[in-house]
Image 1 (cartoon, rainbow, N blue to C red):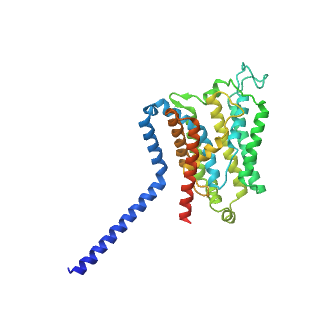
Image 2: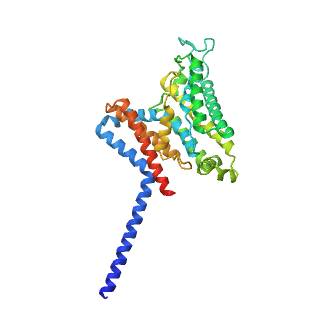
Length: 347
């Protein structure tokens, strides 16, 4: 073989190697984009475990899962909302109102400050259904306002956030409701070593996953977030789906309220202030895009776990709650910046 032929062959081989390296690099990049949040969670767990070995104590692990369950359930509904290119700022106030009503119907008959003095102990299903109805109705009102009046989701849910909190304070005259029945408290307890809130969270995550991935409603949510005009042209009843979507988000807030009341054993009218931001954070950290049309239930669950692990780890390390809030805010900003850069490249 002549020198020129060898040179051409070598150059071709180098070009092929570069092509293969590029392909491998692209595969790695795609893999990291898809599973990066899981790697981040693993690294976070490893780092905190090295700094504080007590973190891996089984009791503490279950504590992390239990803490994550409340805002994790809220994040499930929030994820669907953000996929549709919306937002719901009212879920914290809905949780407080649904929880306070449920607690007022779920007190023991001998409660010192019984909300309804002449009401005996109610079966636990009664306060549960009351809370779920309140969540669905208030969420449905949000959806109806957004769908049928054209009010931006931010404004409609901000108004609901303020009104629901006001109604909650008025309902109780600013006083907490305490001394719940054992059946109600069981919802925040354990079955063996497994916390009931974690089981409820897993059930809600499963239901939400089926809705989003195996129903026409789920397809419509993605279509609305991707391009609402195109969704309308293709025959999607956008108004009806928005109403159902926000009602579902309110329903998830009510489920979180039931878990909250059962776990804490009481509900204060000022409960869950800022929980809507935590739900948004969990959803965004999990990869749900504010540009709409992108997001998964699994991502929301991982996002909630990241926040739960971070908060628990920082507490074990003695970091003040103020710094935890600052760090959580920074994480949200970074997650949104990464999402914006990713979507700008696609465009």
